[in-house]
Length: 431
Ligand SMILES: [Zn+2]
Image (cartoon, rainbow, N blue to C red; front, side):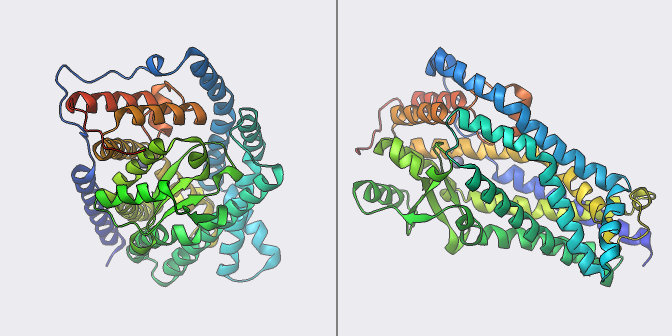
């Protein structure tokens, strides 16, 4: 088959993957979480639920944290693009590999190591500055030693995943120079699913200790809540998040037998039992609607599409030459591959966040349906926002580019709408 035929097949595969993604997004995403509200929806109003002092403090925090956080992101991306879209990255990998000799595997290892280390070093000053701001506002409880250990662990995990992907990719490129993208797309999608399954047992324990919530009234009431929701939960786990942060949170992760509901120890300490029930009811919403599966399916299809696009972009005339390499099989092309992947995933980010915000709103409605307790839900949202210093009213661009959840004011407005739709208090007895 000629090269142009292979490109056509790749284009067709990409089109199919995009259609599958669109269908998944259209069918699974809860675009409407509540039926129309008589008299219209409640407008989100931070001033109604947060004091001027709380709003001033949150705004001051965001004014301090945004510059270093955003500069760090921009520098990381700019460096990746600079190395990959010019010949600098190829020259760097070449210069590193030459004195040490060795085959392509050795070069892949050195290239991945160089990219990860350089990226971390370039953003280090801004990451240090961001951590200082977190401490000034009492959000971080880390020492510099534990912060450094965390960053080294994070870099180690990034490097390990990068090496699995790059060794697989270059082994395929070298055995099937024309068709590598087809098995690569399938294997990359499989890797997303496997990582999603293994994340709770492999990666989460690297950063936190998880213990079953001790027997008692709270644990029993949470298990009763899950039972009433028709969800089999073996265990509710508590994470020792207070080692790092004062922020309050809970989440659900894992697939199948590795699925778990995790509540931060900070939330257990600071929230009332009814508020913890409200938080857990939200997490049960994610389980009920299979949101981890949804995220994993989106990730798997998106990753396969990125691989097809990568192949099509790498085959455009002049792309390899501009990056200073003559063949993709040459590991000096790694910076180029990473730059294209970074570009594609960055462009996909805002769409992912948009879908995440819809899924979060559905979990909120689930929490309200399950507990019937609007007052506690609102009190919990207020407490979470104040403790976590959430931005009460982020600029639209910041919201679109970074917000994985609706704002506290939006979540409270949703609860008000839910209340309008459920006028008879359906309050369920509980602590
Ligand atoms: Zn959630």
